[in-house]
Image 1 (spheres, rainbow, N blue to C red):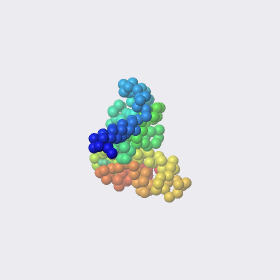
Image 2: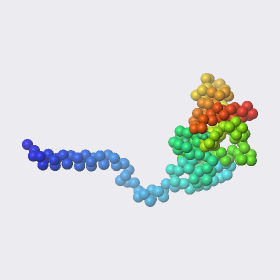
Image 3: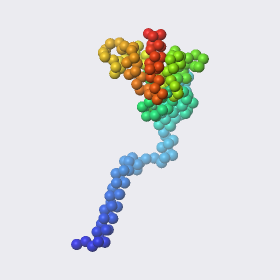
Image 4: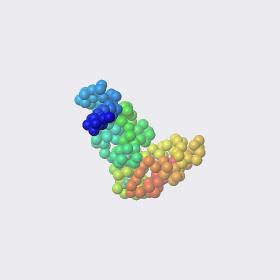
Length: 213
Ligand code: FES
Ligand code: FES
């Protein structure tokens, strides 16, 4: 029969063995072969060139840099906004090779040679893009934080409809999508506006669609 001390010791041994086993399980398999942090950091930088708003821009970036941070922090194109940084709000929408994309969800180094258009590349205060002008005319914003993403998305939405790309709201996936409020609302649903300017945004897009269709 075990004494109290023997029982205490074996319990302690059991706990130590458990802790050692948990630590071994939690240690990543690559940890034993991981390079020292200095060497790892040096090898994680890469040169990347993109055409941004018509100009060739070359950056040497940490490979983990998002396209959003490359634009805002490295190129100082702060028109593109960071809302959630998780692909949930659309504030970071830019147009990449003709398609809208959440710049917070993609790494800059994945887009070597790509053409990126940000809000700064669509129009200027003195020469607004028709979509920017329509947002102003229809009060398609209040605080304006979501607006660069909304405008980039809206420009792409009209292009998608023109190209016949269906949305979740399209009744017939093989027919030319309709240009109605339900289609526009569905296609713009990835762009959140906390000020609730949604109906004015749809009015602005509808006006531009009428002009260009
Ligand atoms: Fe990219 Fe919100 S900041 S989706
Ligand atoms: Fe304020 Fe859309 S205008 S969040």
